Length: 143
Image (cartoon, rainbow, N blue to C red; front, side, top):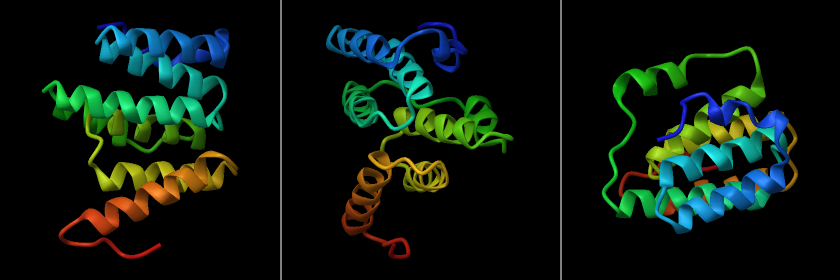
C-alpha cells in the first residue's frame, strides 16, 4: 500500500494523470493505490466526475475482492472535523472508498460537494443517495 498521505498531495500532479494512474492500478487489482490516485485527482480537481466514478467503481471491486475496511483509528481520524470543506470531501470519499455502502459517508460527501458548488459531482451524489435510500431496508430521510 502506498503512503497514507499520498492521496492528500495531489496538487503537484494533474488530475488527468492521477486519474489515468488510478485506472491502471485498479485494473491491476492494486485497489488501495488506485484509491490514493483517484483521491489525488479529486484533490487537484474536485468536480472531476470521472475521478469520483472511478473511485466508486474501485471501491466496489475492492469490497467484492474481500479487502478489509479501514481500521477504527483511521476511520476516527478521517471523521474529525477539519477547517477545509475540500478536506472534508476528501475524508468522506476516502472512507467511502473503503466502505462503499456507508450512507453517512455519501451524505457527508454530498454536503461538502454542495458547499463547494461542484456542478458535476453534486447531482451524481444526489442520485447515489437516492438509490442507497431506495435500496435500504430502513430508509434514511428523503432528499
